[in-house]
Image (cartoon, rainbow, N blue to C red; front, side):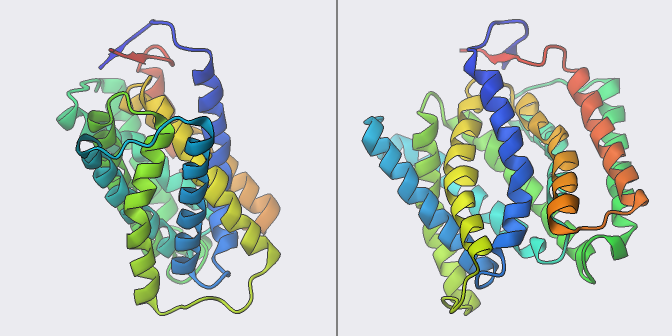
Length: 304
């Protein structure tokens, strides 16, 4: 639960902005990392780099890495959620423009709100929120209707995989919020990666893609960026915010990321976006903004 109007640490808005920027660039980095031997290899390499970095930071800062029995439910829920979410995202990223990854994940506040209402009792639905949900869904339908402008012949299937990833991510987010308690954010990040890494490794072996013989600098740097910043820093800040913000408000990070990601994709990756797709994006963003505006205070703190 949250307490509107209660003061938050000054670091929370800064962390919020950092996560927005990281998540706006992550879809493009995912797209650029795929040629490095297939999505299964890219995923495994990203998680391996991320886990090594997270453990090193924990050792250098002497923050501790809890491995007692009580923390494993959190790691397990988060690890399974991370695996399911990212596997669907990387699989679908082969078929859609990078900016549309962030667009579909913009719906996570809606899904998270429903899951949080059922699991955490965060009852915050109003007429305005419901209208915002309808507007966001209409926007997504507009985007889906323009299949030829989404990135490839299987783009609509790719977007469907993104929607599945959103649902998995929402369940994992609420589960971690419920089980994580006051655990250090970086420890949660490392524990979740520790659980998910064998799953990503198994998926890579099953895919049969093997180790790539050639890797471009752009692909290699993208994987490193995703492992260090997109995983360790991004997830660490995200779980830090979970300790201070209600689940629905936390998911509002995705309100602005679709617009930024689409702009970056158009500027840096030559991804053409039609007027119809932009209309859908604006509808989704407007719907999400209505949800955020009707929540009252932008920065609401969890009840300790």
